[in-house]
Each structure stands twice: as structure tokens, then as C-alpha cells.
Length: 226
Image 1 (spheres, one colour):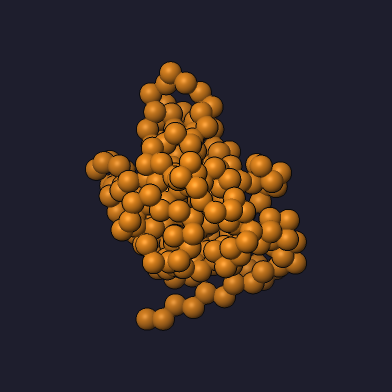
Image 2: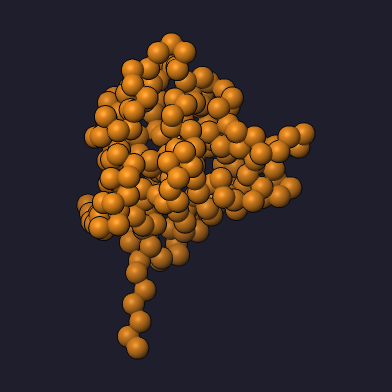
């Protein structure tokens, strides 16, 4: 079965891309604004890049891929109970990937956001709902203006409970009839998380914008006849 998704960039989106200097791996001069990656800039396989909001609390982590990680991180940072976020790469076949490596669409990594949260204030179930509602899970390897396997919709679970909750949420949404097509989100065991370069962290906050590169959530438009 062939699934076709039409993407329309509004004038406002064009203006946003102008402010950000472009979007996606096709704009190498803009998203690689940090220049050549030096040894000191190499991503780390740790959550050190996350900026903590609170300390001395019991925390859990979640790992989501939903397209361009700039907007995904910005969305999760607004959720009460989220203590820290970091953008990076996961699910690929090479260690210590750089942004340029991932942009080649040859390493197999997805752009992801690592979310550290306080389960007493926000549940993993709630984070799943935020994940699904803020990107288009029906597109296989694209979100908005970005195309490539690095922009795939994926949930990397940590433990059986996260796997069960993610699987149940995907099945529920598939059966809902709300979407334009089947949910393409993959659900995989959490691999090593490689933090992205510093200039990608909290990118929208640094740029002073409150938007996202995403253009829809894959749901059917409801049209009123009256």
C-alpha cells in the first residue's frame, strides 16, 4: 500500500526557516553552524548535555525520535515534571556520530530527544501522549520539510513497562480512526544515546523563537458542515 503525504509550507513557515537559517540536513551551512566538529565537540554517550531544572529527586528517562530535534526538545521542555532534556542521536551503527555523519543518512541514527523526568509529577504515559500529539507518526521517514531516516518516528524504550505502554498507545491510536494512515512509529529497545553538538542543545531557546519545524500531527481534519 502506498501512503502519500502532502507537505505545505506556509508563508509563516518560510519566515521561520529564514530566521533559523534553514532547516534539515539539506541546509548544511545553517544547521552545521558550529563549523567543523573538533575532538572537544564530539558528542558524548552520556546525558551530561542535559540542563537540570531540579536536583535530588528520583528520575527516569525517556527517548523519543520525532523529526527535527529542535522543536521536539522545545515541546518537551514545556511539560511540567520534565527536569532535563538533551538532543542527540540513537539507533545507528556507528559510535560517536557527528551531525554531519547523521545527515549523510548512512549511519542509521535518528535525531532524538532524551527526556529526564520526575515520575511523581509526570507519567511516562503523559510523555507518550505529548510525543504522538506533536508530530506526524504516519510518515515513515519525514517530518515537515525534513526527509531521511534520521527523521523517523521512533520510541526507544527503557524496560518492559515503557515497552508495554508505548505498544498499547500505538495500538490505541491505530484503532482510533483519527489518523490519515497507519501509525509508522517504531518501538525499539533503547540503544546508546550520543549527545549532539552543543549548538543544537536548546536551539529554539537560544534563537528566541517559540515554534517548531513540524507542520502537523497526522490526524484527519474535522470539517463542520454548519
